[in-house]
Length: 75
Image (cartoon, rainbow, N blue to C red):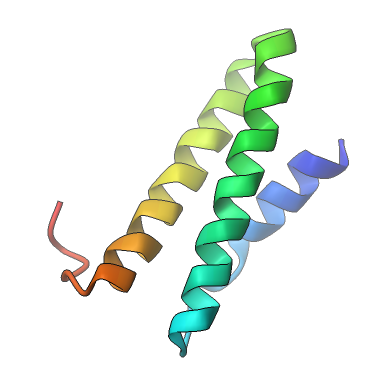
């Protein structure tokens, strides 16, 4: 599963984005990975894929919070 490897690599990547455009690209990449994983999850209902999607969603939300200018500690 190439997609799962790509998602795990994204998850373990260092989340340092010096520019706004880097943050936007990272948020878009996370969103596309989540949507692609969701299509796989619909077919075989694997709980590991759901856990991976949840972790990616958390990362994406952190990036989007940073884009909006809110502090990272706010929920």
